[in-house]
Image 1 (cartoon, rainbow, N blue to C red):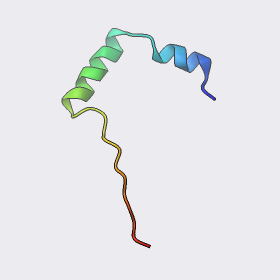
Image 2 (image 1 turned 90 degrees about the horizontal axis):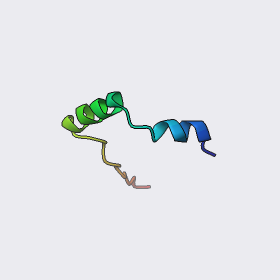
Image 3 (image 1 turned 135 degrees about the horizontal axis):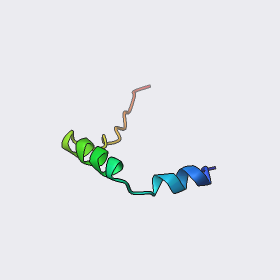
Length: 40
């Protein structure tokens, strides 16, 4: 169950978050999910 306060804080836009998001985008953004299959 998600914390209502954490959800509310995550939706707030700030200059600091925008700057962090731009920096992350320059580094390639969020990593893609990698699905690995292992042979049994």
